[in-house]
Length: 315
Image (tube, rainbow, N blue to C red; front, side, top):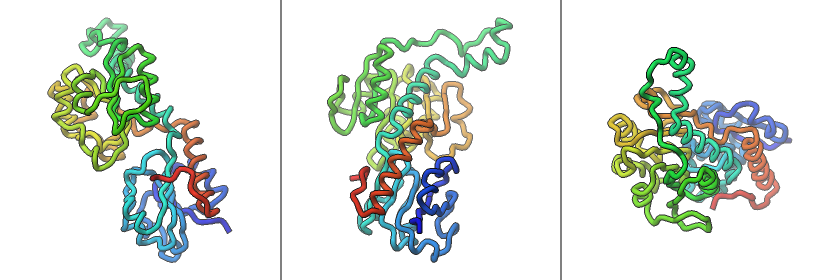
């Protein structure tokens, strides 16, 4: 009989197909587990599959008396109550670096679209403005990419790939992270110092209590009127109301966001601004990235059910 997996987050059917070949999937569709399934159905579940950003703590763990593993589809695990899992002897695993290239690609895409005013240019052409020779204040010559001072906050696998891509555009790259890394970019000892120096701030730090709202009104003021920020990390890293205010009053020039304070994102003042580029948390959403993340999930689940050490266990 196939082992049961509680699928705690809402996933597309195509993303679950490989897992369904090996396991019996109890899919909650994003609902609380006890609303989707009876206590009897949950009683012998030994593993949970989830998106790492979704909150999973004691309330859910209490429903799963035999739970031994929480496996995250993707790199993040900030939604998991690690202390609660540790106290119950539950191992937590993720898919490290599996989507790093895809996320780095989107970070650069957001930055380039923002700096080169791609959305405004597209709308201008589609509306007939170019053909009619209408003036467009949004299409004044932008700052070029070459020579830009690019600051990267977080130098994990995603940060390293972002840095390599940014450097290829003949930029000056520096970074700040929890520790210094063996990379060919200048290390800056504090986030404030990095923000003071850079013109482009690319956020790739792992989310957690120590980074919540760390990019606040004061940091945005330090970035300056010509500065832009791109976030492909977690929405919790930026104080979103402060970001909206900074964009509205010209404290910063623009923002590119793939992640938000609340997801799914619902329209607010942010979506009305012309100096932003927004995408619906699609950084890791490529065929290759999904395949790699699924490989990690299968490796973690397989090892767990065979009584072996999980290859991508979270420390």
